[in-house]
Image 1 (cartoon, helix red, strand yellow):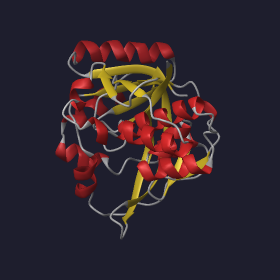
Image 2 (cartoon, one colour):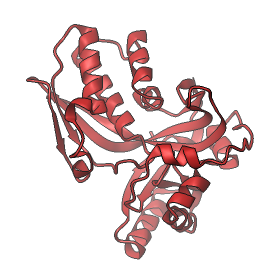
Image 3 (cartoon, one colour):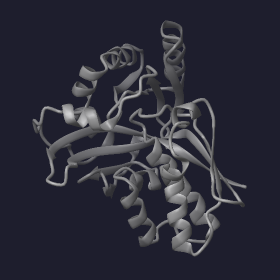
Image 4 (cartoon, helix red, strand yellow):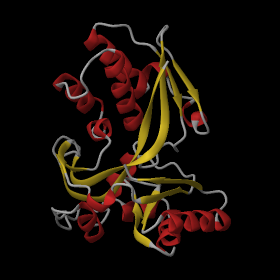
Length: 278
């Protein structure tokens, strides 16, 4: 059996610039990734998907054959001239949560099977496959800090600086929020570009243009961001992606852990994950 982590994706900033003719939106974002996430394992045998973990039930009603994880596995196996293996997805991250979800899981399968099938992860055919699976899959395939433009799949490497190893706390109010309705509720106003240069400086000067429409659909997001922003030692607190997961970066591990305990006490029903940035 081989295994890989589907690292949780965080949008440190997300500027929506315009709606495109193809129905997608042009965005400018800074992707970063936590050290933790879902777990993917592959074993020899007939291709099938087994779901485990605390959030497996959220996917139980889906057709396993149409799951993005199995689509990724089957397509990479075809590319390699191999048979797809059995896949186990240990679903530890909430679903429809703005932190990668199926994209991160699909990307982890691609990384895992590239190793099993002796294909270089940087192979252009793998990159094309990832882009075809979804706009966030190329960034999740790399799972390092990147700037994303276009649909989010035009990627540019950046110097991570102080971001590597930064203490991170993710909090979700256990509310699923689909991406489509949030983009649909965006007001269409272009509020300007995302700055170049140091990604942390750019992120702190930036914004998440999807946060206002997400808050309108799910007001508790405002409570989560406020709870994180009020903690001592916070560098940046914001919603990730289209929500409803929010994050905070901290000056120290101790400050992150104090915040984790404080939020657990105040809101014991909220999901939390303490981690660091990769």
